[in-house]
Length: 317
Image (cartoon, rainbow, N blue to C red; front, side):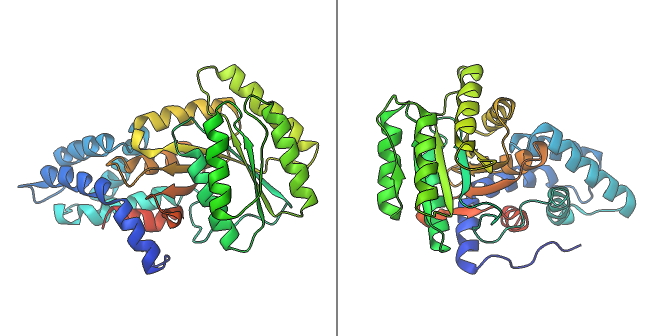
């Protein structure tokens, strides 16, 4: 049952390994305490393992699924030595994640179903939304695509300035208005400009306010409605950016945003500075929304497409 092939180039793999280092060492510290002095996987080991997974931010529901899978395997094999636990975990988590058909990408790309392909990016302030947009624009441009950015987070002056910095750095056009202007109007202008310039991809930044879900819903609905006047069925993807270092809070944000708007993909950032990388496994399983990208460092190349096999392989190395 080998899901693990070398999919990523060695550079990408090294970046991923380094980005997950803290999560991995924290997890293995806890795991080694569970198996110390024990030779076989029994009910006690599984109880302790359950706690390790939950405290590693994998999430309760996903943890129970993983434990069930391991229990079934232990029952089938009669005797399972604790030294095999790491491999079993790796295989069972990969098996669980492979039940969703997502997370098998190896390169940045967008479907060629629409031109321009419109991505609307949502998420709370501070989750790394603007940075993710900048790095995504860089990666898509590197693939030869023409990208246009839209600064529809008109709620904070800093958001427009930040996006401008990224647009300059990556060398892509940005459509913006002054702070406080109507986000839907910015989105409309962006799409019109993209159509005129024959762009391949449009990435729209939106305000990350969660204090009032009704306002957020109304604003996002209005942006969508206005965009559809220019490009049919847009946005073609709603990308929710979550800060992985907040662990369980990322689950909460995912719940709130998925209630407010149709989220079709996730980006989980800031995994390099945290031991909470397990949150990717839990969110990927629980929401059945594909994790499309993960942020494992500060550099331009440190936004990676999420490949579940490579992720699990790096996490349980």
